[in-house]
Length: 406
Image (cartoon, rainbow, N blue to C red; front, side, top):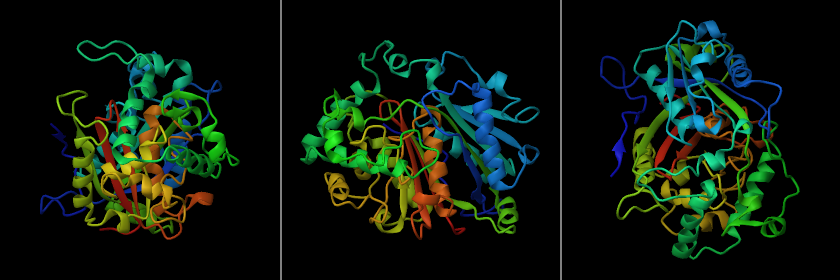
């Protein structure tokens, strides 16, 4: 029931061999993610991220050949097709401008589409931009609109995903404190990230467990915030990457990408461990030449909007067998300094401009292998995973980036 994407890729070749060309992250940029940006429009907010990404890459907007943008459904802000009037601010005037939409995973998909344009030899340098200004609408109620021929939600994303979490707990026999452990880790990590929305250095397991129950078993402190923010990534081909490296700046080489999709509902669908996620991960590891993800990946930025999704996605991605994801968390192995640091940036639990959240995961993975993560840098990080999911756990996009060219 999964739909394959042509985005599964590694370096693996040239125009002569028919394989994809090399692509690398040349620079990344983000805004300071907050509850409400009343000082800027969507255009101004995006331009902040774009200017920071260009500065990080040592480039100007004139060096960009094409722009790929992504955001969550337009109903989240009530502005339809905003990329049309934002083209000038996005630096896309007179250049190809493409919009991507795959629900909450759209940020990741945006990064992959931009990468594909470079790998296909269509463009030399491509700018990927994703954003959300949630304060201008109400995403929870936008997600609760009745859709024909589908079951009603009526309680936003949390109400939809809570039964999946309960099923995971029942299947895996996970103890009830695991979700709180993830929340404590990610919020403390977020406190080290100057761009993060929520900064809670003093959060404790007890305080999380004492927070209000919103959708059993998801508590208030185990839930992502609603953020205004934007993220931008500059991608380039081998020649562009080598030019950046020649200046003494590091790049993040794209080792592999993958996207998969499945319907929201069909008979026998496993919403705890979706087939599309498993297939995407398998394709990604093959594309990146990874045979043992837990040993070979140094850091993972995984899309975790509700804390229990960390152990769920660790299993879905194939880091551990089914039922063992929570054990990795419980042992502290997903902390910075553990076997597999997960979300050292604070993750979606600390910043959540929905349309940008996936691209932020991709950017944060790149920052780790470029050694630009500051106080939350994972020592010796050479290979990193960026991951995003969206819809009813049906859209998946992910990449592996590394400090060395494959």
